[in-house]
Image 1 (cartoon, rainbow, N blue to C red):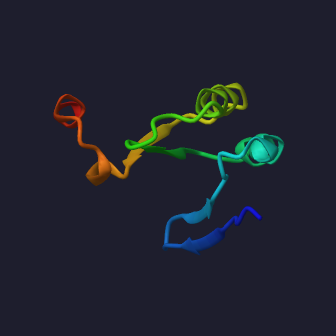
Image 2 (image 1 turned 90 degrees about the vertical axis):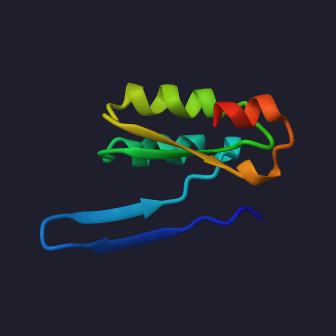
Length: 89
């Protein structure tokens, strides 16, 4: 089973919705539908595992449907033992 999450909140000036779009290939179709309404995306990439096969596909799909901004969050940096890789971070 793959869990998903959706959280919404607002400030005086904006409405925010955070939707967890798992990297699982079965969710790519749902990601396309939701991405058409996004003003931005946060792409979470594991430093320990590296990009998954669908990471590039998610980026390309977001660009194709007009998501104007993508922020990359590097997760699990504390699990990396490679000094050269840590230097890049």
